Image (cartoon, rainbow, N blue to C red; front, side, top):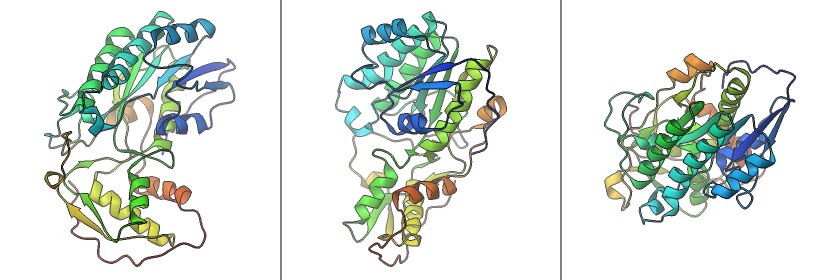
Length: 322
């Protein structure tokens, strides 16, 4: 990913990452930061995003130059069960963090999602487009965004989509794991978005974080980040199997299926491609295509060595890019 410059002043910067055990938090903590930065990733037991007392305590114990909130309840299906944790983590928590950072004059970065949109657009969603979430997860994230906007004027809300990485549970790892036990896979081809490497997202977050720290007039507001190029889940799964085959790992055919054929509680937007032009304009961040980002992840997940190999015949019906 091409990013704008991040300068290094002599001042030591303390950066607090909330939700450091997830995909993005892990990538952000492992990212190479400027030497003058100290990155803190307290565990959930030390800093729970829904615990107001814990948030107050961590601000009393230290001075933070920027806070990045990566904590989220991301189980979209489970969110439909009415679990109160969804609203606590995705709505109440961001509001508490935004309030605490505002009191301390600290810039705040909050991650959100493409699922705040309903998928009826015919072109990529801009950050200023109205939100109309279809499911409980999306509703909770949209409400969290609103609280952040009201509480701290020095905020950046960064929406992203379809996050994958070598870390934790995600679509790429699920596809690779299922291929170990099945002779073919079925993946929906009627949902289109943009894949996002958590590693690339971490690099973008660092650029934004450093700008907020170093420039009091840094742009603020809502932005989008995702790797370049639309894709369906089916296309991503096919590319994953093709990448596995090139690395002599087990690969199986991927058949296209429809969302309607799946029995799911949560409705998904059929089209949630995010426009990242605003981020490029204000921060000089130009996301690379999702294909090389995926290859980089597969290099980590499928290191060289003897593996069980299956031939990769036809991959079923391919869905056209939209």
